[in-house]
Amino acid sequence: MISEFLSYGFVQYGLVAGSLVAVICALPGVFLVLKRLSLIGDGLSHVCLTGVALGLVTQTSPLYMSVPVVLAASFGILQIMDKIKIYGDAAIGIVSAAGLAVGILLTALAGGFNTDLYGFLFGSILTVTRAEIFGCAVLLGALLLFLLYGYRDLLAASFDEAFALTRGVAVKRLHTILILFTSLAIVLALKVVGIFLVSALIIIPPVTALLLARTFKQVLWLSCGLALVSVWVGVYLSFMFNIPSGATIILVSLLFLLIAYVWTKIGRSYAR
Amino acid sequence: MPSIIHARNIRFKYTQHWVLDGVSFRVRPGDYVGVIGPNGGGKTTLLKLILGLEKGEGIIKLFGQPVDQFTAWQKIGYLAQKSPVSQSRFPISVEEVVLMGLCYDSAHKEATPENLRAVHHALALTHAENLAKQIFSNLSIGQQQRVLLARALVSNPELLILDEPSTALDAGSREMFFALLGELNQKHGVTILLITHDTGEVGKYISKFMYIDRELVFFGDKEEFCHSQKVADKLGQFAQHTIDHLHNHGHCPLGCTCGHTHSTQEAHHD
Figure 1 (cartoon, rainbow over the protein chains, first blue to last red):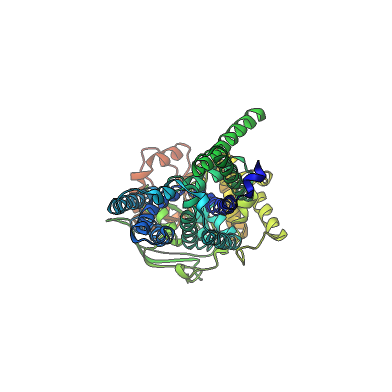
Figure 2: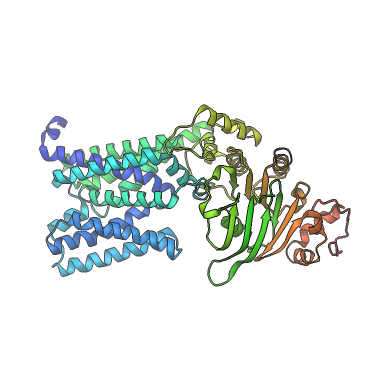
């Protein structure tokens, strides 16, 4: 059954794209969760609706239109946090609401919802193109280089921002780059899990890994592993039972979270 | 003598009102300065300005360099009031936390055996060596504070900046903590700037007091501090209970050698 599943070209494309997206979402997700900025994924994914609607209205690629829109929104969030000095969750909420409102308005002007828009809202992993896979691979390469070079500084800034500053760590620059990577990852993940669920891919695998891991490096590895297995199992189940792939992927990752929670609870009570 | 910290006419405001206004002072090598003052008086803001964590008006120089151009951060150890992860799970070992106190030449460089020796030496200094392999967030708040002090000490700093570090410690740990700081200052010549409300316990080690209440009310030797009418008036407003408590035990509340013992009702050194 699995060999038949893997023999389809569109399944192979979907699995490769899903695997790349899993890692480019899970890695920045670890740092965002620890910085209590994990909802930035949720906020920026809502902003994607504006980009997708713009693309559909102007008959251009919704993904290409989403890139500048989401990048602008991420800068907007950083500016609101920095200049107006309000909490991150409030800044995310403001930008998210603005993105959704403009997106809904543009969708209405374009004549309402259509099949293309549904694909971006709920994910359509089997329609991923070669160019999108290439984009994911380039982003993954850049992200790995960034993490390799900035690992210690990122760790220090995530653990204790004020102290990291007193060690000369460029905390603000690191956060800006991290959020830029997250923005691009969200855009590229739209086809895999959809606007509504992309933030889950950023939040759930790192949270599960944080429950299980004993070192920070383990958190990074486990997050990637859990995200990858969630995508593979989710795509397989969606193919087998003809159900939406995005939602299935997220439910699988939630199941892992539940298992990890129960496992740690049992472990603790056993230790007592 | 060159200054370790030179502050000239520092001003800072968060919104409309000035939190600090016209604060000037010099901290010399070997000074042990106790920074006191009422809540909201600008003590923590002053430390943040010194460390470059906030930007205000005026001039602050660290080791002769303006703070915004200062790069020799290994000369400074910093310990904040609160542990950064007291509520959340952050899977990082005590060893790794202390390692963060060292400045690396390149960002991706792994810890060397020499780095690890420095980490264990710092942990031994704060009596936390047995915690080295434990997960930091699993420790008690008091243990976390000892580890964070080790992180502040690991680079052998010439200046230690501490913001109410003893708040989470029990009485025994607090005494050990202040004795350690006293030893670092007296034996190793480490300059210390310490925000504290424990004027009684720490008073015997401190050489200078700085009293901040939005402006610099006093900065000078401990003995002069005890005889300052301006300070006595201010202390009466914010910490009479501390003075009373210590007076009841027949000690000068600031641990100085002025020889005064006072009744609870008596004004301090007037």
